[in-house]
Length: 111
Length: 116
Figure 1 (spheres, rainbow over the protein chains, first blue to last red):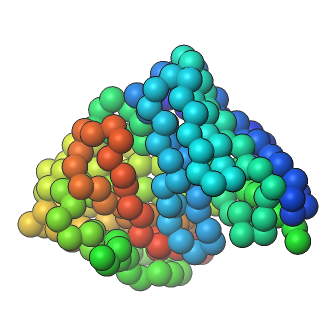
Figure 2: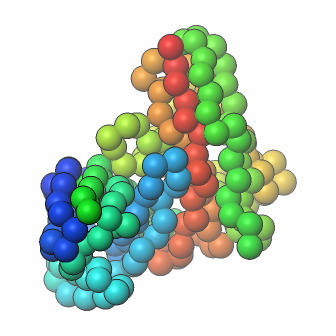
């Protein structure tokens, strides 16, 4: 069974601070995705990283895929209250693109 | 473009009762997924359909859970009988194709089930 571990589970910071969320696995995935989920809604895809060592930027968010394609990180620069939510990483398997989710990181950004 | 629709949004039942959830995927999407998300955890895939065939139901508790996707469009997930540990949000998602690693899954808002 492929497992993904996210850390930290909870993050409470002030507006303007930087933060990093980590996603680690002992298994190799064909690609890795990051989602954001707000209360009462389903997860929304932020990014997909495919190549080992790949770095993608989405405004203030930077996503990195490890060289061995087993780990990833999400870095947010100058966090804003609108960034508050549950951040989930998901490994994409080779069988029909099956997603295995981490347990999530609850981020709260205080004004 | 309309998103994935789910109903009901909330359901409260007593243990040993039955419950059914409905999902209408995005038009034209071949693949439909049902996930269970327990509070404090990430979603766990229960079943994946490609058109109206099942491609993965390895994590579906088949003694009490069942799902069908008639005519390759709408889908229903049923629990009979429900247990306390089934309390969770049930998410439906759809994607254009299956087996494509970078294919985007679009999630519905989910049904929050509480079993008393």
